[in-house]
Length: 371
Image 1 (cartoon, rainbow, N blue to C red):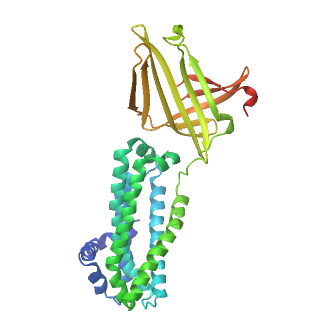
Image 2 (image 1 turned 60 degrees about the vertical axis):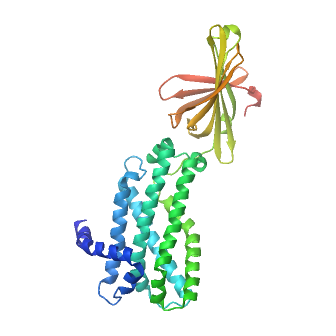
């Protein structure tokens, strides 16, 4: 490892000079490179590799890792970076060849190694902004992401996730603007007209966008914590009700709690409603809340993911006053072991939490209609 790092460490002063020149005058810097200089190809690759290493080190606090698999995750990110480099330089060479470009593969690798390094830093900046937006507006889901306990339904439907994706899309646009800034250098290296250069740029944008799904598939393949199935078994689907005696039961007002499990496409959903009756100065006050979220089952384990805020209503039966309220939910998810047992003419759903305590609910439908 020391033999690999030593040349990169010695390259740091040259790296800083190249970085300053590339940022201040990108087109002039690339055209000033002596393509016949010995070792220029190696220096260009070293420039990209060192940029990639810096980006990986900076991203370590943000990497979602499960079971401490930092090394595996870093290797996966490094492989993705190398994949990006290979796909990028291949598409670049192809686009210029289509319009009659004359630059050889070595020249394009040298130029692309410098340009892609700045693209890496652009992605890094927008990645940090995206993570910040995500954490600020959806801290609970962000913490789930940090441990790779990801709810795919919540990711798709969360506004904070949408905002973070929008930031990344802006980063995508800025990267193309950066490429446009240096595109004139590519044109001179390939000795083509401005019209052919414009066609090559349009082709590059189109082909790189088409190649993006391929890269995303590769990223998912390298993900060491794949997402679990999100559907629900048929036996769990339906309406489950629990009626409990409370303070107002003697007046005919029983407390109720119910779960309704549904399946919408590939996603399992649930609705959890609670109705509690209390006595206040001999008046019955009903407090009811309803929460709808996502649910998934793995074996006999049931995971439910509520929204961050639940709505409720409080009604005083003496005064007829209705008052709506909402309150934040601090719990990002809940985990239960579930059992479904026959009970007289109905099925019974029992949920056992990890903190102990078994709570059971009866199916609203009769036993014969339950699958």
